[in-house]
Image 1: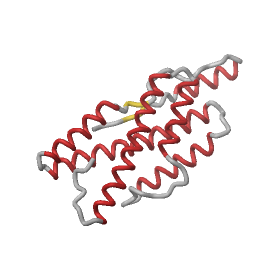
Image 2 (image 1 turned 90 degrees about the vertical axis):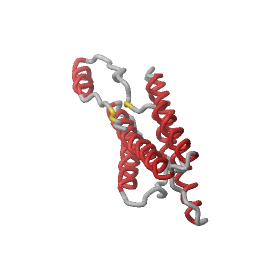
Image 3 (image 1 turned 135 degrees about the vertical axis):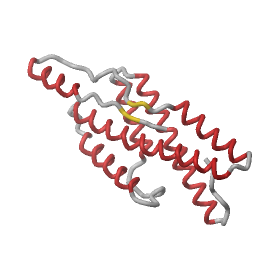
Length: 175
């Protein structure tokens, strides 16, 4: 599953020109990201069905791909949130950037499914969705909210899988 975010770098140039001329500019109406909530649901359902058929290896492959896609999308979306806050000259931009960087570093570490960050990534995503609604980007806000829900689900799955391992059970394919 290939996921990507689309940042509008040209928006910064437009914003700069607008500031010089005294015009006001709203953030671009382009989609925040190409993260597909329906695909997330289909993928986790496919993993569950493969597990029910006894295809543990296939279920695990599908589940890992789904969890990785949520993780990568969360990092990229929080990067975009920090960038938007900076573009809008919001006081919380620096903190959002620090949290985004911290999450990226934590997710790059091997075995980092459970790491104390000092913040909840899904909470940051929900704050971003709120900002997008304020900017009249409702469709984008809905996608980010769905990603926040998927992030919560993914963190819960990591905990369930860890608990299963401690109990001596096979967590492969549990998604």
